[in-house]
Length: 401
Image (tube, rainbow, N blue to C red; front, side, top):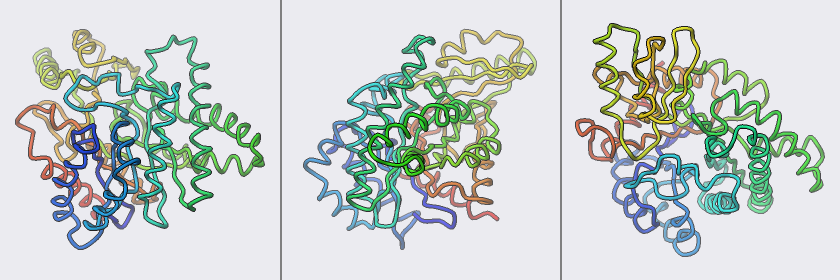
């Protein structure tokens, strides 16, 4: 739905269903009720997540039916989540969320398919946004191989840029791939994304597009148009990043933000008494579940950061005396700030949205809370009510002057 500052939606990866039949059933079950709550008299935007299998069925068999359903329900699609390729619910996802990575033809073909579907669904005069993984999972590769891996992944990403340029020439519609830095992705944080963009993507991309007949300026413009940033607030908060400083750096270098994914991490202080620290650790244990990766970044008292691949790794090292805070990748509900002795990084969302309200740096906001099924039981509500509450909370923040 359109707000004073941008289009706001939620990501349908909250809904289980890896086949198109199952996922469409969930959309039909939930979206009209959410729209009735949030946008009863206006069009409602949807952030669509399609597994690879679902994307094939939709493109080959069901696209017209889906377009008619969107029209009948006054719903439009302007952004897609192309990060999770396969199963995302009811199975141990963990690091497999990165597979297949950008070293593979499967990731290229999947992303191109999403772009072709989005070109069919995208309203006129709107840009299309597809978020994707930070190239690969860093622990699948030896550190001395990372430069080679980055170059190969970037070359594959440029194959998608070729198709996006074709789509723009053929349809007039602009679609961009939004890279999503994530803890332990090969592009772990904003700084690594920026370095990759300036030192690898632009040089390789300009050379690639010049070989196809574009001049240097046109090639650079094409890269900056079709490869943008997905600013996931949870991920940046887990890394203790300075939002204002990072956003300013992206702007200074002309790197666009395709969308902000509004999400919250868990955090807890560990610099209190022994008893208080034990309570914090025990509270984190309640969120230790087997489906998703819950990377933990600990901040030491000297300001240095310690990175743990998953919650169990952090829990096994919880007796350290030099750590003052943990932050865990979890995507907890936005509207809850306190989880007993733990807190969320809700304040980071408020900071980012305040920056955006003062000087908008994206056209799209997407709520991405997908952990409802693995939250402690007391926090679970019916999905449509949960989503509506999330979106209302964000709308209130945007409207609060």
